Length: 285
Image (cartoon, rainbow, N blue to C red):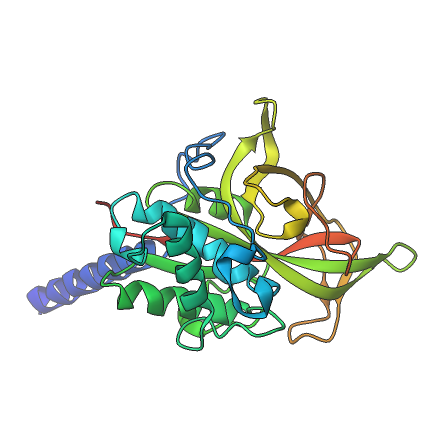
């Protein structure tokens, strides 16, 4: 009898250990996050979505998602995942071809209204597998609708998770919502959105350490026609409400981040808010 009890106890411990390892594999470790990280700032491309050379559908006006992802995929192609980039004579044209593919119905299904969180996550997953690779981790944090297999069950993006997600063979894409702020009611009315590529954090443009800085490559023509690094100061919202017609709204604005100084705000809104984040982790090479 005692032997049976001991055997059952050992089985329970073993199952618990396996479950713990599985759970750990689902989440990138947030230990030892560097104070600042800038290794990807310079080598990551920064294409403009409306560049005539790109010949993207709708003149690229709605292709911020595919172009932002293509920036990171081009970096990954230079770091052990070369097949992500189509084989063409010029790297810029190859990257634009990749952005066109990513925006197609086969992958992100980008429309004239842009690309949702579901489109980005599904598109990234399908494209990576079609190019002969497997990813280690692909998850989303935020309030926008997305497939359950990419869910973290976290509606308010966590800054530590975002920063940790950028290390190594990885990519992070930020979904910024454009909002009209009514200071008298504390409400933020969502009027549109935009995707950008996160390339670093923790230092301002003068090189001073600043934990409130996120460094992005913004594909919008409003950020300029030529490659540039945007040093965006973020600030946590303490009260108010996010409103709009999108599924998932209204909701409390508390805890979400305003993308402040350094962010090129679209004319559709007067403030940018970090609605969601996609983190991709590829295997070590």
